[in-house]
Image (cartoon, rainbow, N blue to C red; front, side, top):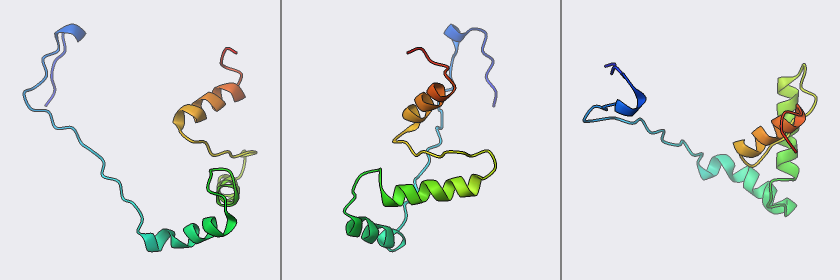
Length: 92
């Protein structure tokens, strides 16, 4: 069903709107137990060490070609800020 919008300010939405929601598919403990043990053994509980570095190398290898450097970040905001800085597109 398509609703005609004459003006942004005069939009009359339908009475019932269904908004789809994504349900996360989390791994079971068995699927992540190996990684949890490795984290415990390394004593690195932050985003900076062995497993993250291994993931970055694996991703860089998978991308290949023009990928000269892969860096994981905490969220999309940080990633976008780094991309802007890398291309010198933001004001400092």
